[in-house]
Length: 426
Ligand code: KE4
Image (cartoon, rainbow, N blue to C red; front, top):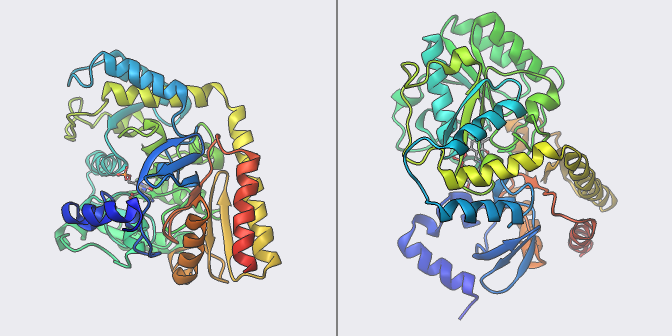
């Protein structure tokens, strides 16, 4: 008979590759059955077997206010009642663009798309169009969505699957993608030396969260800014995860480094399919129909998705104090985890920034792809399955992040730490 999730997974595998619509959801790297989720509210999700979990995936970031926030839900219902999509300009798109420009000083113009992948793909094209150059630099272990040119030493599910890059990607698509090492400015300077005046842009996760969380060392982001300025290349911050999470103006505000272009996703859609890319007016002016860089989308700026995203972003703009509270609660969780790992002498390290964090089952300091890869993914799998079996929903992969939402309470955090301690004690 098995559980309802097991039954659904068997059926799903008949009709959907791997039974899932995104690889990391298949729980392949930790084993066990993916939980089929029926509903979610606040900090909790409930699966098809009625099991409720305290959720630290938050749909991989979007649900910073918690699931099923009443203001977001009401905005979606109200917008849907007026029509789902027009394929025409709407007032809410203007308000959304204006709000993003107000909240993120480096953004003077922004284009809405439907996913982080689409945002990054389009930003790269704009950077190449603006500079007239072809090469781009990305970092080993960073993941920027699944467009062909970026599936090179990517992080997230690609890293989890142990696939250094993807089949089906012709060499021609990646010949202009150069890779460097995170937190290693020399590896970037070397590429600029080797390819003078050929690098259109450097794209970086200002806090890497797709090899697990890897924090930029002090000189890293300012060093990238300097290298790009010296070479006449653009600096692109992929803030699909960090945008509106670390603070209202994201990692660029948190670290005080101003990129030329920024990509967004996740939080700006509040759970609806939304991505965006934006930045300096002169750079964004190359984008069609104003400029010659073509990019389009049937559902870009979809009014129902805009209603969700606009509501969530407006609440974040109006309540900067919520970030302090979010970071305080995240610190309760992460400091508690650190204390438990130390108390039980677990060979593991914890990397955190604000409400983002990862436990790596390794003794190494995790500061880049190579050190992240030293993690014992079997140990992570045992830990993760224990958490699932005890009502805590964590990322089913060593190379993802934990996300804390504003809906998590101190009781939720304590309950989580109790489950971890039970695991470490046994
Ligand atoms: P999407 O196309 O999945 O909306 O965004 C791609 C993307 C771009 N940039 C960064 C920094 C990202 O983290 C992502 C997507 N993140 C993964 C989680 N690590 C999405 C989860 C999944 O693939 O199912």
